[in-house]
Image (tube, rainbow, N blue to C red; front, side):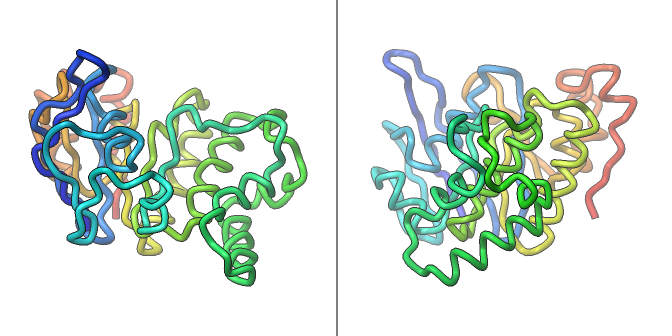
Length: 245
């Protein structure tokens, strides 16, 4: 579904990605792990058109998408739930979901998909008219994911879905993401907790200093001693049970 071929990207004079390649197959769940500043979020922003690589090519469904505006990339079937959620505090839940469907004109389909988001996240149905600035962090993350789903994506991009959440809420959010994946959604995710990411994903890419240094099946990387020493602290190592099924 997605092919990233030898892309390089910079912020001003600073090169953030160097000749990076990866693939994501249809219905696959792929995660990017690595330390802060490794280039993970930059990679996601390149895929969704928010940043333009100065070298290389990105293909979605075999079609080059380099240089295409983010709104057009959404219409092609890529939705991005961003780091730190990017919620408007004075808009309510229902309005956020409507904004997620801004590129669509099928009113009946939008209503149906809104109901589907409410079925995935029942808390949002209860709070549909509540201002999002008054929601908990976990509820705001539900809004961000639900908003992305409203464009009916083929590929869902998730950037740090557990950021700032209590451990119990992280488990709830990740279980919901797993259910979305099992419904047939293709997912690429950046996650601050390597243990969490590797428990749920099919495959993983390990990034360092703007390059990919390792890749493999998530369950195998979870047991890899070098990966465990570098990216899983003692607390995470102790609870790094593999949950994918």
